[in-house]
Length: 119
Image (cartoon, rainbow, N blue to C red; front, side, top):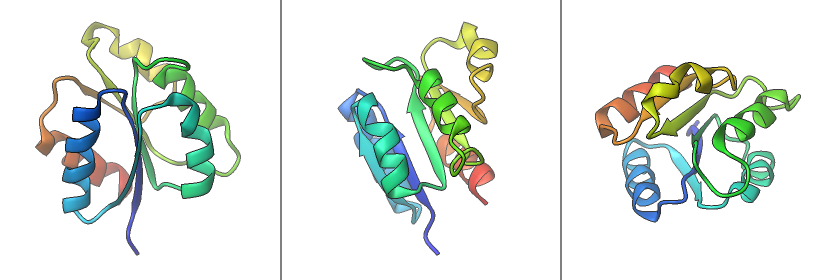
């Protein structure tokens, strides 16, 4: 069965390249640039993994991660947080994420982390 990945980033270029890369790797990918769409999409799409940009308007990726981890149905879904703020890595893990990818990032690293968390 095809694994599903939900991606949040307010940078359309990043959304496009992540979407294209993960689709090429045979994942079903749904993307959004709006943090308010994340929880409704999690509930509708039932992703196997979620990738969240930390710095987005509205709720940040850490708060969204906490919401996903607190959800009775999706608490075990792995969450990766994208961040350009490398010095705050321990702060990001405090939100309960399973991995952090620092921006700018390597697409090989993205695919490896996704595969490690989703298999």
